Length: 243
Image (cartoon, rainbow, N blue to C red; front, side, top):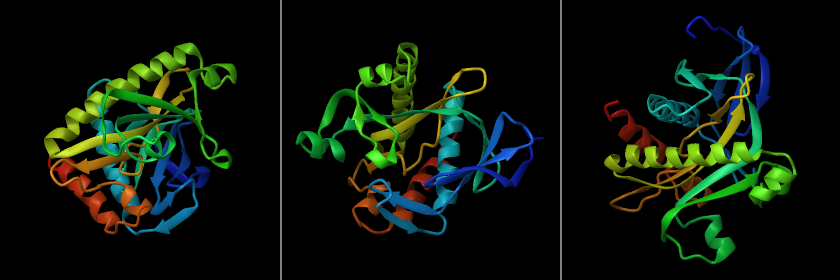
């Protein structure tokens, strides 16, 4: 895809953390990472210089690793420190959350013990709608309201569990515990289901395996300080890993 060019004037979409631009290939978009932090469905916001660079570097490295392991992705290649090329997809209105350890909303919703290691990965579905607060939904909701088919859900579950195992294998040797993470999926013009969006400290919870320090967006959510330092630490460990 090295011949693909982009036109910044043709912005297709701007979200909380990224902008999408058209390229000279209608099947390819340019993804530009922003320095914005948001939490609690946009109620808490901040700008931190360098955040977009770190998320682009981290997400690109993780996508490259998943691609080597034959996970179907929208990611094509990293262009520079802020941008990457991706296959243009139609995003399904579902977020898939995988929990390996209890923390965050599941503790509040269910009164679960903080930091409990689950006997197997717990998969949850959320309906993507900021105005509604991205409510948790069931597979029946997804089927009845037409957000996904039974085949979609089966494929999403299979890819998600595989990604969970691969990410654990990637981060465990780096002294990082994969606590939980969020994935999004989309369909390309041929109807193929692809893992989309990003995988970064914005969308994952990472804990240092020795100290329990948070190395993710919880540092912003909970005002723990040194937010960018945590992101830098994830990149430092990832970039020092062979392959």
